[in-house]
Image (tube, rainbow, N blue to C red; front, side):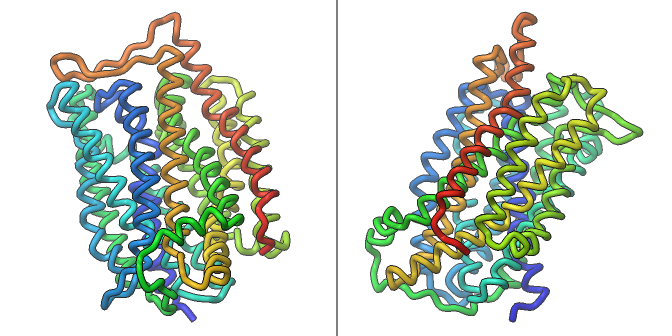
Length: 454
């Protein structure tokens, strides 16, 4: 029986990875790269696409490598213990803007973004795989998965809510591009340190009780077996869709506040920036992530719970499209974001628990453990979905008339022609509502075809 402290320790792992590093990368990076760092929309989109192709290779290889690791700290925990510091350091460097020209900035962004993806993979794939060796009890797996999601959303809530106030705290008061670059660099260092501590704590506080059934030598058979595993195929597609859904919303939120609503909205002293706007969803996800196991028992299965969650996400996303594009309706927008987040909160823990089910199915069918390899597809779909959606956001904004880049003096430049402003606004609004709605419908269809009945 796992202790409460171990469940908290496991939650700290996703609080660090999902609640800090990935949350900032998902919501702040598109706007940061185009409006502050100084990449063009084409460079931003290409960067994310290249990183995703990189992950398609590294994630499964990392899963297979993690499955074969043997050390005094266990199979998966050493990757968290020794990967904690590199994760925090590279994250901090990625939010630093060097005083380079266009080519130098491009090299810096591409180099550190790829490094960030590599170290995130080296930490997060083993982290997810831990769930398969900490317990063999299905209810306890659901509990660990729920703690994980609550940890991620709770830290995401704190990170996003505090973000504009922390930026203001470290500002020199000018508010120009140089000041904004300084603000993000300081926050990157602080948040990177927190992410490193959370990851390290997770590695030290958790226990591996089950021994993976290892293959005697490395072969490509586990990779071949994946594509014969029907539940894995459907769940991977579902995972990609779930991260497409979140990715569109988070990647475009900054542009929505800046261009559709004219910047931060202040209500009774509360600064509603794009991070605070999404914070309301984070706290909702945290609450309903905790309620997900009870909801699953109530409806009868993980599959049924996921279906209802997808329906909620689709309906509320369509509803957002019909809200007037006016700051006066900010609380209506927030209310719909909260309703959408009920669906997200309910399905997020289910996804990782279902990966554990698929891993158990594969072990029973093939005779050897491929837990790390199967969980690596979860992190791969997370990064693939978020980054492709981020790349599409950048490309579609460029098509609508948004232009960004760095001039010959190394200064960030952003321009939108007056005749293109309405086109950009409408594109942003659709990217936050109708695009995610379509993805939610696709996710619903895939869940219906998912073959495991648990």
